[in-house]
Length: 443
Image (cartoon, rainbow, N blue to C red; front, side, top):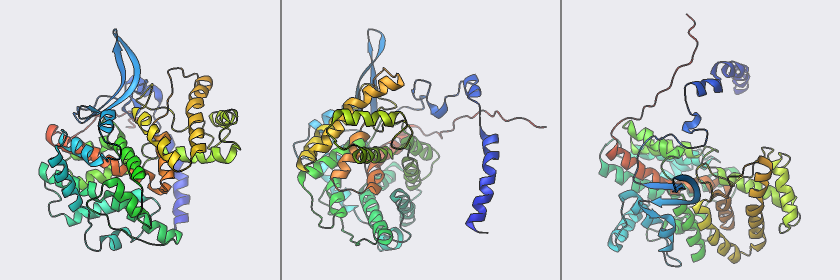
């Protein structure tokens, strides 16, 4: 049977599935079931406890729940504080990874030791790059990485060991090789499918994650201190986010079943690659490119505002009426990650002579919330989220769009690892939610 024949068969079954698998909104309301485990106000159903991170978007003011500027906490420290403590060009990804994994800030000796062992882990099995990554390359680098993660399990003699120390070792090894899996996966795709030159640069153990990403990605291995610093900040901001996001919950669900580290991280990867989760900055970049194409003067506020109005009305860009990068499921007044990133974006834009583009971004940031309030009658406030600027950073760094979500994964695996360890130690019970059957009994 050909694929065309099978496609025709399955197309004919679509309506049957829709008819039999659609569940009325009234039934969800009748039984008090929240779609997506979120209530009508967007608040998540409480599914667990964690000491790893926290998100604050409301505060109690005289007994009234009041929206506030967003806060993101890692192990009891505001992310703002962790970044402010770094010197001008000091990189903080590895130091913050230690904090998230082990629950406390490292001393200088502990940081040096941790970085030493991460450096030792920056290697793949013999011929792995050729036989696994380059064999069957994919434009979807997330799929390529997931395949590599599951294959790495076959090289681990303790793959199913259920000890905490073994889990820590496996997580550190994966954190160390994730940049290689991502960048090599992209180079394989770019060579075999785009006929581009192939080059594989090995990471240097003494360099940071951000430095090695730029070094492995670029033909000349060159990068500036500012470029490494800004990429490091982006990675720090994406490392962890409260525990309730889809991919982190996936990590905990798989971990709770007793499955191995590679399977749990591969499952998280499969979650993150979904466009509703990890691909938001791609949609922002596609929208920005569309605006650049249709607006003759990117610094003309009225012209930009007029085109944004057309986007909201569903008459421009993808027709969905959304201004991507605006608003967040949890934050109401502001996303702290966006506020932190913006100053670094401006510094990088100045160094890259992208002043005109930063003006465009500023206009969108100022005008989009006003238009959304006017046209959608949403008056609680809409602010830009971290995805609004992260794609612009990647663009200025010359990072291809195929690596946007993999870069998210390179950062977020630290958070996944911390939650896997916490789930193993603190929960010790399989996550098994209940579903109520509403099927018709036919006999």
